[in-house]
Length: 93
Image (cartoon, rainbow, N blue to C red; front, side):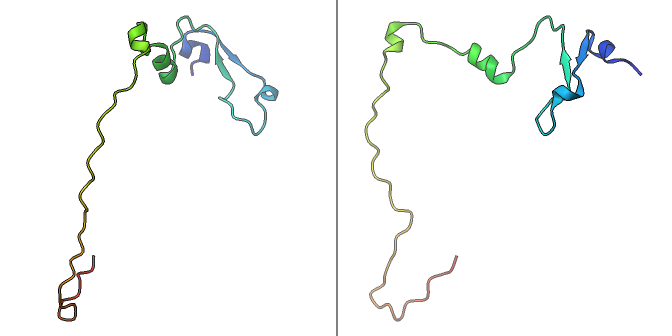
């Protein structure tokens, strides 16, 4: 069986059981010590590399104003026949 330091390729420090705490969220006590090029996780990476507005004309630009949409047609239209007593019952959905 191989040791932890040979699996990770560097030194690994085990935290004592008292430091882990009971009922708290922990990662098992493993801490990688010698990471030479740590990478950012997804959200941190996207926040760091997001495009930024640098030009004054772009920073001061207002949102586009569009014309109002016309009213939508009704989805259902209730049709009442002239003689309601002879009309068939409406279909149930």
